[in-house]
Length: 510
Image 1 (cartoon, rainbow, N blue to C red):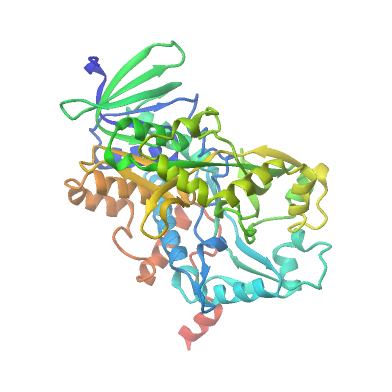
Image 2: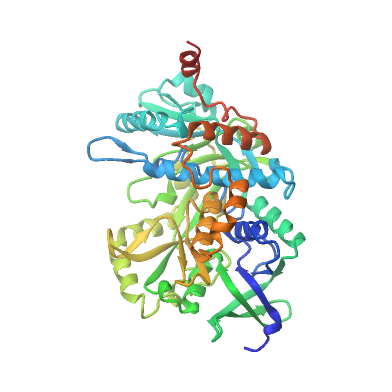
């Protein structure tokens, strides 16, 4: 590989929310660094970050029951919920900074205030939700949460869900008005537009086919231009592999030891989208239920108000499924070609451990529309089949690795950064909560890969993210300041910045 004229400081692979976030952070921290990006599709945010591919909740652990586990003694562990909420607040501060500095405009085009709710049925689940509410609402991050098991109150909160519902089964919900709906597709496109204005060369319809380390330490990429068919050679000091499900293959090609004994398990998704505007108007919240026994965490059923293409939409799902593709626009051979001699035993162990999950996913693929409607009717009792259409969501590739806790071939549900020991290359693997915690994850990449520079960058990082290095939960005054500031700059018409309850206000006044 000799074409060293295509040499740069940083190469970003994949034009999704992760690469966009890392690119913008680097341009703020070191404006003179040269950055190039390569994307195999025709535009930014077309794969996992796309608004129709299930990347739009604004995961802040306000409503997702799988982030709060019940312990053996009946108490509720809220550790993960706190962690994810803190990470989402980091994203909010970053977006707020970009809007204040006019680096991106019209925040309403990518973020809207929206109540986040958890909904459960049955005596046992209602008891769990109440204990969860008590554990969370004592924490400053969640103190504006409300709980109700009163059907009349729930009719006000979720009229569509309560219509024609029988009163014999116990039902309860929690609600936080300070949730959001985030259109990560729109945000990704905004960020890449900004990067192009900052002289970042974004190459669409360019597929990275190979990646190798040169003798001088540079990373050399073989890139195919889909328009011309030509093969180009590019080199960089630092490479970030942010290609969603496609990242695993490129990590393997890099040959770094940290990428060995890691596999991927693809999970596809299907959503139902409401085509009746009258029904869409009757619901205004994200409402999460409990996952069925045996279902993966990303298959928690939820009825979501979404804002896509400046229109209010209503989605239900996701129905999980199995496809051997690692990307929505990938190859049917992706799973097979990801199995290498160094991860074969890990993959076989995962296969043996997850037979029930595989069976569940295949059953989900085989569901008829009417069977899917039956699941929707647990949320909307009078839902009519003609009011709902099916849409195929994006692919998620869960990380499989050997862990101390889970042993050989453990399936990981989360987002994971794999980086070389010298920090010259990093790859992002995994799925949810993904996009919502992109800023936290990319700060982790910077800390790992640029240990010498991170100290000198710290003042600028603190300007971008005022809570950097601090726990918001342990600094309630800073939390209130951050909530008020981000709500104002992101134009979120919500009471999230006033999270003291009336009762607490009265106590303060007294």
